[in-house]
Length: 324
Length: 316
Image (tube, rainbow over all chains, first blue to last red; front, side):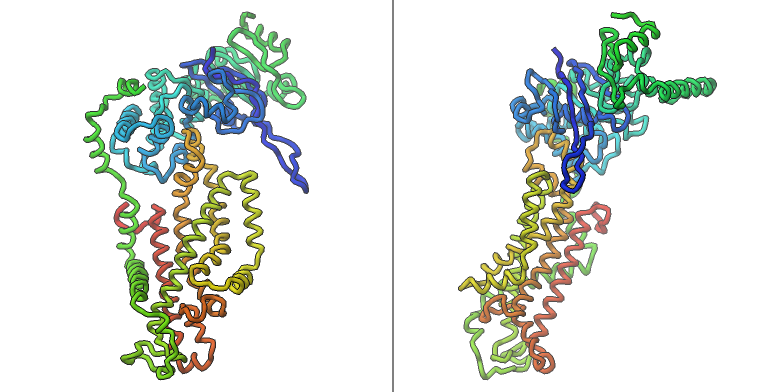
């Protein structure tokens, strides 16, 4: 059984307008998303800005009010607040935020920030609590003298590691990492990512890794879901997504990865333009008449794509994949 | 689970005392220290603080030694006595009552009302604004309609009517009557900042850490808008001295046998007093000006202390 099973998750925001301020329409931020996260794996959720990936992540932590659908954890639907309370859900599921500065309360000392989940869930004695905070700081590579400082006294990378320390404080089973490194420069990105991997090995944590940086996702994730316009357009293993992309949106994302190979600059440019041309010409093939993605169809046991069955098979055979 | 952390970190219970000490050596100074160093860096504000604290202590203690009913008796022999004499340091008013003694008791009454009013109305206004802004939705809607209703009532007229209806009122009941009407401005101000603040990630992080709503409101959000709260409280304290004074000046504040800064300034109603008997009203007027200026100086220092980018003190 999977650690977390997300089924047909929908988050819609009402649009109010007119004289009576009635609900006239809704923004479909997340519109029917289903996937499972296994224990100990890193699941990548990729998409452009506004594709609904952060909303999905927040729904899984319980920060977002879900319109419909279910998120099953230990046999209970945690979209309901009473089930979250019953399970002490946030003891097991924590979050790392994108903006390390705004996610740490500027008026609290590092000790109080990291100890916050411990105080709510574990009720340790004062000394035990301080010891745990010191150990956590040590694990993320910060010195003990950080204990009584404030968040603004640290650099971006250090702050993000404090965020990681807070997330692992209760030894959770799943951490939602919402673009944890997109605000950091490249050398610090690698540092934080390696910390996250190290912690995953040592504590057996699963990650739901939300990102728009495909290079980072390739480094971190075994299974990847591509999200576009509130729906999943492609699910697969790392190999499926990077080497055998089927949906045009996935291909566009992959084409957008910058190449440093100067000698074949023209060739890259040509292939990029070709992908864009296909997207412009064949939009109607990849999206339905409302511009939304189709339901997912399975092409191999690990690989699913949001296309009508016939087109999916046709594309899959072009790619040279074996039909399951 | 604890052993899980033990395994992956080379820190154990034995290191706790040493590391705590190390951390304390590097600790950021406490808020009280920061505020104190701000005062030391700003001499006028330090003088203002000494004036306020000294003056409040002086009138609070001094008033205890004055027999108010006896002081307020008419003394025909002291009719508009000149100031700077042995019996009347600051002269006497038309009923021959000592202006100096009235000033002490009157300041105690006025400042007492201002402090009481600020504490009650600001506490209520801050709580109202925080709760309304944080919960949003229907709760916010309901609370803001109550607010709108209170704003709609003509404040001065309501206070005058209430004062007329209540048979035996004194400075305590007057404070409560004022408090009914003076929380609104604070609450709207606090609400608008809370709306912005509760959207920030650290609130989401607290929710994800399982902290309950009340703790988030009062332990997470409130400290982050503390500079706003401090500035608002100091300004409304200065303003609240004026509230009582103004109403007493109109004749609807404290009863006439209870001296206050307002009743003393009301002496200036008479053109004769303004030109000839200046000592009946000038001391009270000067006192209000000096107090309000001092309070706003102190408020500025507190605001600077709350905002690290504006600090002038040496401790950082």
